[in-house]
Amino acid sequence: MNTRTSLVRIAGLLAIALPAFAHAACQDRFANGMCLYGSSHTGQQAERVIDVQKAGHTVGVNYGETVKFVDGDKSFTWTFNGLGGRNVDVQRIAPAGFMTHGLNVSVDRDPSNI
Image 1 (cartoon, rainbow, N blue to C red):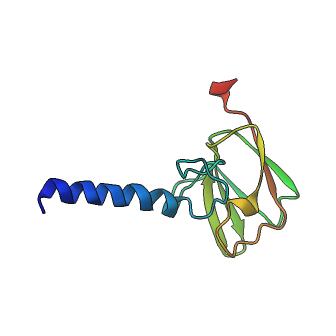
Image 2: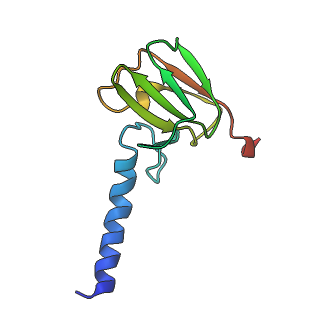
């Protein structure tokens, strides 16, 4: 097997595996595997932190905003850059085992599509 064939195979495997791994928490996807609501960002600096125990029932976020959701010692970070102008049940994007306490997020519309 030559180097080019090996690289093509590796690239193909990564193209299949990475989207599924990167967005493992999302339940609703486009045909290309990307989440309808945005993307998970481990380690990315959040613009805002939301404690799901204190947030109430619905919080508003700007399209493209990166938010860290916290419940006790558990947390995850999400960027809302999928479809704007929607309400998202946080349970649909949270990792397994993360308690969302019925929290919904109202995502503003994408300003570039208005």
